[in-house]
Image 1 (cartoon, rainbow, N blue to C red):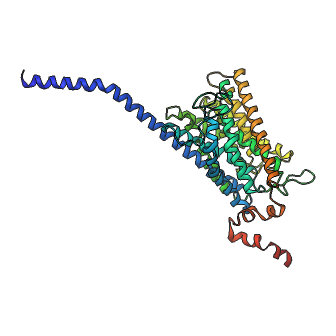
Image 2 (cartoon, rainbow, N blue to C red; image 1 turned 30 degrees about the vertical axis):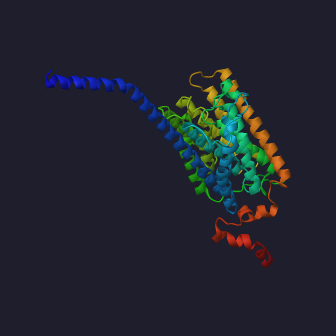
Image 3 (cartoon, rainbow, N blue to C red; image 1 turned 180 degrees about the vertical axis):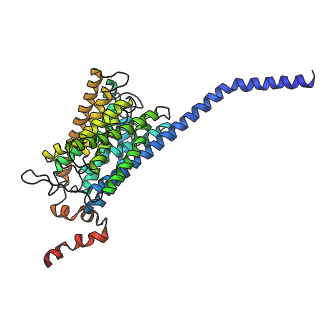
Length: 444
């Protein structure tokens, strides 16, 4: 056999062995790359959801008077810190542990041994828990004891949010939640996260009562404007940005569906703001920046349940209706003397409920199916009963154990920055007002 023939024979044998092994190796490599990309996507989404804490902090701090700025920022910060520990210790197991009853999980508490993929989900869901928890912070601002609030936040992160989450999304280790088994649709948490947070806020507001001077004896409504609309606007932009991670990363897969999810999310937010502007023009009212931002946030909350299963036209309709709700419902709540500093009950509670119903009404593969809509309504009602009911009991118990949830009238007037934290957010401008009030009164 000459050298040329031998060379080509060896090449044929080598190439055959390579091609024989390639399919297995390629499949393995593709799978590893796929898992790695999914992991990066979920963790980056979780980081964006964590960034929502900054958005909430800015909106809430800008919406309160300057004397309460530090207090609001502290509550948002501790929502992430204390709530994160509680969710790791208890919440993750209740939400995603083995669930053969349909009510909550019975395993994976304080997890220290998980496979690589489930660490991603734990991190991602921990950020969701912080979001659900912090919604109530702004609503109850300017009159709740800081320690009492932090304790109540632990109940939201460790019990209220994860138990309802187990009904709708659990489990990943075995079994199903009872709402999930019915076919309940809530892709990224219009009810699981936002309505639950809104109903907790409503319970807290009712137990606390309104701020001093908010309502007159004869039913008058007195506006108590926040100190910084630029902070509110910046917070709105940050929340909008972070919402792309909140919704699109809920795929927990880096697949091609994320583009439409992000688009639906954006369209709904735009529609909410535009719907409010149209409403204000028709009614001859001023177009307010704070309500515009809340209307866009209402659109974001509304589309969260159906962003993956809805046509863009219906996403726009969902957001527009949410924007109109934000335009009208806060005034209705005021008639019942509900003092919600940031309109969290409307934006998160009611718009979340609407969005959950809309996910069933406008389900792309089964439009206007009454059975689907009924399941959604059951989920909305269960969310209200659980979120509001348990939170109301928790706030009442804390009020008894701690001698009251609410700070004294003197502390409320002086501001919680100084009375709760011994700090001032703007010391160059506030020191005289805070520390020399008595002297000023004596001189005059």
